[in-house]
Amino acid sequence: MKPGLLFISALLLSASLAGAQQLKIATFDFQKAFSEYYRTKDAEGELQARVATFKKEDQERTNDYRKIAEEAQKLQDGAQDKTLSEAARQERLKAFQAKVQEVQNLQRAIQEFRTTRGRELEERSQRIRQGLIDEITKVVVDVGAKGKYTLVIDKTGRSLNGTPVLLYSQDLPDITDEVVRAINATKAAPKAASAHP
Picture (cartoon, rainbow, N blue to C red):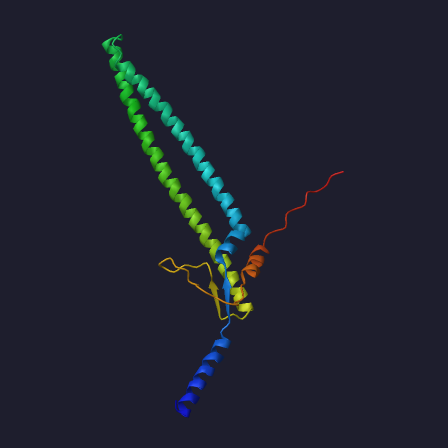
């Protein structure tokens, strides 16, 4: 190799190493921060309460549906009872047909209720989740800026094809614990129970 070419190669290598030294990278575990954020636990509790309310309302509607369906079955049996007069059977047949319409209306109402509430719960869950992600991201940006990091990589992140974004890192600082402390610092201290003599 010519001495001039060797010098240029060494110069390029030293320049790229100098540039790499200015690059300051940290890693971050978004899943851990999300699961340890106190507001995530609060949000999960709120969503579980909403789901429980939905299930209770759905069960009440289902119970009403069963009751009306049983009434319809009795009316149908009565309409076919040969021991009754033709007029009585016709009366029960009309009542049965009205009850069948009521059952069908209630069935549609239950399906509509399930669809609407299911969509509401899903949208609420997504809004809450996105809000929490935005809050955590803001703290990551603040911690990254304070630490003068050039780049913060989510080590739990996935690419579009599902593979990990960060495949390997050695000796990179991890700011997860610092971010978790910062996001949980906003939690109000639990109120001490006042002692009465």
